[in-house]
Image (cartoon, rainbow, N blue to C red):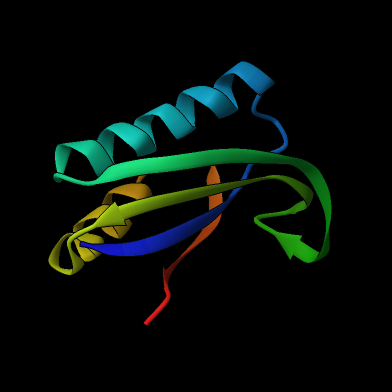
Length: 95
C-alpha cells in the first residue's frame, strides 16, 4: 500500500455537520477498498483565487490515507460523484 493525501474543496453551502458526513463517506470509500485513513483535518473556509462552480470560497479538508495503487482511480471516480465536493486532488506521498 502507498501513502496518499486527498485535499477536497467542499461547497460553502454545506453545513459543518454535512462536511463531516461527506468526509465520512470518503473514509468509507477508502476502507471498502482495503485502505486505511490515518488522519482527517478540516482547514475551514478559505477564499478562492477565482470562482469554482460560481463559489468564491470553499471548505478545505485534508485526508491522509493508505491504499493500493489500483484502487485510487476507483476512489477518484466515486469522489467525483459527491455533489458537494467542488474539486479534489489525490497525491501520492513519498517515494
